[in-house]
Length: 408
Ligand SMILES: Cc1ncc(COP(=O)(O)O)c(C=O)c1O
Image (cartoon, rainbow, N blue to C red; front, top):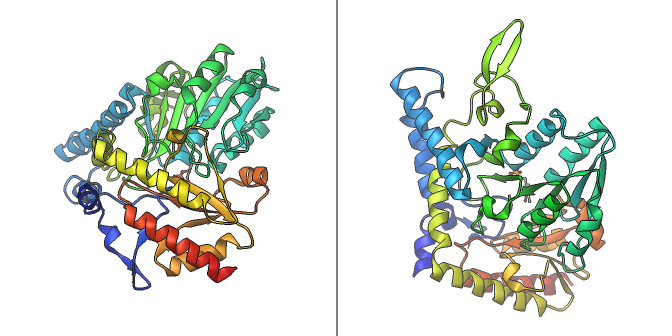
């Protein structure tokens, strides 16, 4: 069966915890590593290790070729030009780079506004707050409704003359709802506002085409999409990247350096100072190829849809369980389920489930404003990947009911 084939590509899924087979449902925090990603990392470390762009020797050329071909593969994956792909250390780094560089590049004047969605991860809030403090900007909040959907009808009036940037997750790490990014981009652009999209929870579930979304910036992490940790991507429209000042100074990001001053390399290299992640960046290629195949696989897509349907139905039937992020159109939900249970603390539930072999996330999930929105101190989250089976989903719901009855 297809799912077993898929599972065999992720060696860690064979592990057990407390003598029980591991049921890994914390994929939104980090996914399992694909075998081919580890192979590529090993090859880069043991066969082709060399620094990039610097020397004329054969190994340097090979390492540089591998690194730059990863850029090309990422550009193909997102449907953009390779000049529009900046490699960073993760989504957080991409967003910090963007906030810093926009702040240094005369995009904002004192008193300008940044509009941020209420559902954002701290990585898409704090860098903007830091920028706002530094440049005397105002932060405005784009609300979500009780279902967790963006209040789209409020967007046009929230974008005023001084709103220069809107920041939205493609998919929230708590709500699991696919936000209407293309529509948001259209509204932003009509009003002369740029759109930055945090895609950290989207790229592993959806075919993302930055051209058709028409967003201005798009950020994500490799470790959540079966690739290696320590790698991230910032996509930016070429004309915008070319207007941005660099984030960090150092080797490789320059055109020339003298005591009179420094001129910078073109994009994207001007944003990649110092020695890069020479083993892990090329290892993104097998993960992208794997995802490209998955997105075309009808059997896998149908299987995932059934899991989502099953979990929505089962979780909604548990007495006292509150699910957060239930879109009016269920096809806009990824297999990520955050919930609370009346009278049971999320940490206690997570600990009992862990003893049953099930890895879940509990707590504020780096989204404190969203916890405040729903008036809770934390939630429990089960996030599925395509290698999670229906048997695991069934074991999860049966174990959840058992754990709740133990704790109540
Ligand atoms: C929506 C979202 N944005 C940003 C991040 C930050 O990603 P990283 O820690 O890989 O930089 C995460 C991580 O959970 C996330 O879920």
